[in-house]
Length: 169
Length: 138
Image (cartoon, rainbow over all chains, first blue to last red; front, side, top):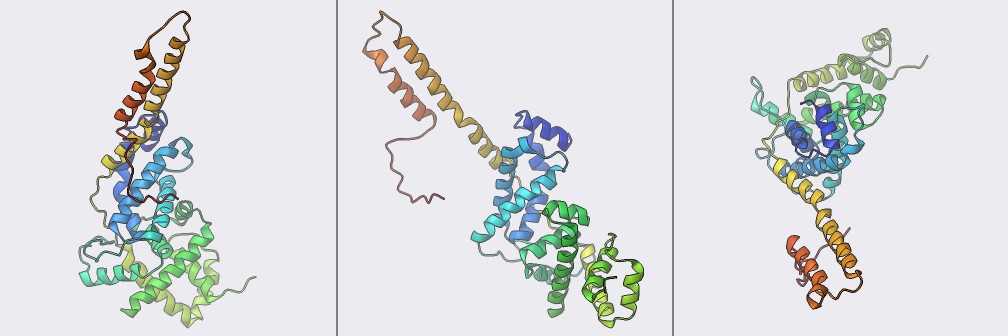
């Protein structure tokens, strides 16, 4: 079942179909929420709340966007609400942001991860959408609801800060 | 024509490296870069970072959020039903009570009370219990 069918059936009141959307996107959503919140429990809470928001608002789903683009705005709002009352950050072993890559030294991955953690949440988010989400500038603009030009400049400054942090190591 | 700053050049050049349409022409960018040691140095560093990040993926943890979400959704959608039912029962009760030349007796008068008690049993709430925990309302 594709997302469009699932959404149509959810709009007709089929609650069980919403499960497909949750199961399809929950891992990606938790990983992206962790980039913003830097905490696994908070990330799961935010994703759960965002899916409830999505269920409540499914009747207003904008068909010109993909489900995940639409959902990401809800997720982002939930993450930003949670950042005010966040729990202490877990150690790196418990809440690793980056997956291990074959051929990459663990120290390099940890250095990169530490540098990412030292960025602001907006900087981490845009770097994540570009590199780990593989999104184009237009797609990032749609996800963050900002102009394309702002994506270009924000991404540039985030990269510059990240490079600076890595040089300090 | 607007004079290019190093920042304009770097932003545009990195956009071009990402396969995006840069704000300035390739010729404008390469002319500036060729004569600017600062931009050459910055670009070299940013390209090294780009290379490092390009192969990375986010760690996707194993999660199963559906049971908790389903529970919350079910609670939300079922919440109105007991109240709709009690409303309907009370309307029926009132209509029966209004029937002329009929004395239903004391037991019938207690029906609304029974309905309300059943409602509290159904929604598992004790109206006489005082919540001792502080709940902060927004």
